[in-house]
Amino acid sequence: LATLKGKISALMKEQVALKNDLLKNHGDTKIQDVTVEMAINGARSMKTMVTDTSDLHEVNGISYRGMSLYEVNKKLPKAPGGSCALPEAAFWLLLTGEVPTDLETRAFTDELHRRSSVPANVMATLKSVPIETHPMTQLSMCMLALQKDSKFSAAYDAGMKKSEYWEYALEDALDLVAKIPVVAAAIYRRTFKDGPGPAYDTTMDWAANYANMLGVNDGEEFKEVTRLYLMLHADHEGGNVSAHTSHLVGSALSDPYYAWAAGLCGLAGPLHGLANQECLGWLLQVQKDLKGQTPTKELLTQYAEDTLAAGKVIPGFGHAVLRNTDPRYILEREFALKHCQNDPLFQLVDACYQAIPELLGKKGKVKNPFPNVDAHSGQLMHFYNLKEENYYTVVFAVSRAIGVMAQTVWARAIGLPIERPKSVPLDTLKKLATK
Ligand code: FCX
Image (tube, rainbow, N blue to C red):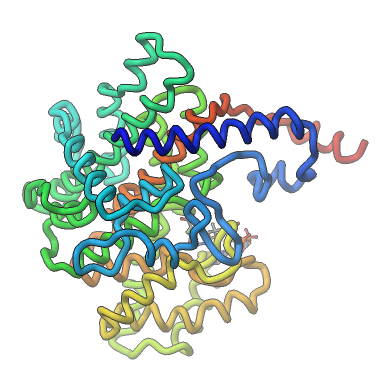
């Protein structure tokens, strides 16, 4: 922990100096014009936030601290014998800006193990919720139940100094990331299985342990694909719905549990995190409707035409920012080609990849006809026997906790203030636009 704090603290000095310089010497410099369209259409592409952990490029996809996901997957420490980067190593990278050594990664995994026990009140909260409740609702409620033990809140009440905010935010961030797989596995077991699954195992890394606790597959490949999934989904800069929600809530100095509980409610939306659930549902429906026919580009083009004609979107395609195939999709595809290319569902995913970008591209209005990560994730989970698509957004949430927590620590570290954009009535917008 001391090494981690030392690294954050050193980087913090540089970043705070940079922030102060920007405010002092360039505070009034114009970087963009705000248009009526931006004001109406969800502030799309408006540069109004600061997030250092990751950056989304419309063609190259997300980078973690300046490294592409291909580099991250290559350079970060792996499990013994594994080829996918460990997600807790990605957490370290996002927090410190540095690739951890194997030794640092192992110590960090142990730090998370030490913080992993979930208080009885959280499990009691879970027990009181009907099992038909959506797993994302259960998860968000559990994050709020954990809030009772927030070290940030306790320190705030005890009068901590502003300069200490980040340290207590870090305490909560580490606790939350340590506990979320335990809670998430408990949600899976109570909702979809008869009872508790395999026990927490401190000999495993963070992702392998989560995969193991789900109790659906004890093979090494499932652990490896879970590492890949949790590393790839860890961060996606600050403007997406769940990160932005968490940032906004955190900017009121609500603690990291409040922030992530709120963010999870956004992640649960069908245009954001729920898309992977919808995507697998759509793929399984296509598979059923094809009645055993081999999925070809022609068949899929026709099927997708019908989905569009019914006024629906094709889940897993398009993106608010990306204008290229999502690198996360490519990395998942590479994994599938290596480990499960004969899976009939992979062949369907592959046929979609051949057919849908061309079709959406021809329609003209879709700004990004290419697949996003959700078009592939479900197939991989399904192949390794995690078949309940209602649960998929929870896996996403376990992963994204890493990025959002790193962002929350950094928002406190560089002292970002309460967020308060200006809203205007439509009449005012009309006046402003025509004056
Ligand atoms: N299928 C059909 N139509 C689509 C489409 C798709 N996959 N993607 C976009 N469009 C349509 C939009 O509905 C919009 O139509 P409208 O003008 O009649 O309202 C038009 O194309 C322009 O939208 P566009 O600017 O390209 O996309 P947005 O930024 O508005 O929305 C999302 C981006 C991701 C919401 C959109 O592409 C979509 O609905 N995709 C399917 C759901 C999905 O895969 N979500 C995952 C998102 C992501 F990975 C995440 O954040 O988790």
